[in-house]
Image (cartoon, chains in turn brown, cyan, green, yellow):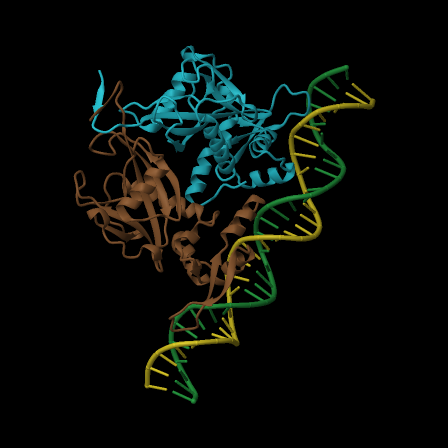
Length: 229
Length: 229
DNA sequence: TGACCGGGGTGTGCGTTGGACACTATGGCT
DNA sequence: AGCCATAGTGTCCAACGCACACCCCGGTCA
């Protein structure tokens, strides 16, 4: 079955930049391509948009299919449509930006017979198509957004220590933060719930665990509060 | 001549939200549709993307064709692709966001046999398709961006008074600003060139004219300077 | 069992910035 | 000459950002 149109149309795909965080650095999810073009190269997960699904739905579907991932945060990033970005012809791609807790998706084996893996964003392999541009755009967005919206918590486990949180920001922003100032500021927002638990299995004094209070944030947001770090 | 593909493809369009400013309020450029669907309704300028042109180029071309406008600032806004947003079938649109100096495009008559006009953004007519959503998204972007990037100057004539500049920000941000604080802050950035000219034809004390120094801004930006108002 | 090691957790002081606030200056008009 | 409409200008206070160093605790190992 084929489809005919009066005028030519570009093909439409979605591609996802999925970030995760692993103690020391920021990771991005890549899939190794099995077919030409760029067979064997690493690329962002993605695929063609179906006629009956929204763009968001397409992005979620591809992530589920290619990596078994259901991200905690997802938003549209940018649409890349230069003629020539795909050697097969005109392909326009709507890029998405997603955050997942690595703890939920540690050893996700290659689903769908494809090889998938986490790479450090600072040390990623050469990517297919213009995916290096897409990745760079996503990183810029993450860096810009993390300071004004509490999306960073989507990268951490539900219960985390303040040091983990600080590390997260340091890794994303690529600069050291002052421990006391960081804690003062984040606690002053009153968005963290202090739990009666401490971390386990550490060979030093255990740190207290906290949980991000999504509900309280929603309320404060409506009241005109602005998260800022 | 027709075009056949193995899988169905959405049609791809671009739509532009063009803002201008006119003393007292913020305007948006609309075009009256001549054909179904939504014949007679006002809509954002836009049209189909051609196979050999980039998305940016398509947006610029449509603006030129439909309104004779070449905007001072243009950037991609968001891509709208819900199935059902266009009654003709699946049409995905990449929305753009543009700023023009109204002084350059005052009485642009209906080019292309279409009717085009500026409307106050707070008092726009009912729009075709999901263009009201697009407009709302663009407004949000403008409000957010104007404080952190010096794009507001693209809405003013090359030479302007500090009061004009302040009005511009007040209109966009929808709140009054303090005259002395505003002047202090904007002049402290040292991005305005003070001219040896004053405004003409006013029936009161004439204000000094200033010009935005794009070159200096580029330099400072490279050096890590951040515009902020 | 005591010393050490590795991170956890805490407060102050200073310089800068944001924001409130009111009067004089100037030029055109009548 | 007086009026009117807008231009232009400085101070003070509170809040915030940022630099900075020490004791605490629990586990490990000699």
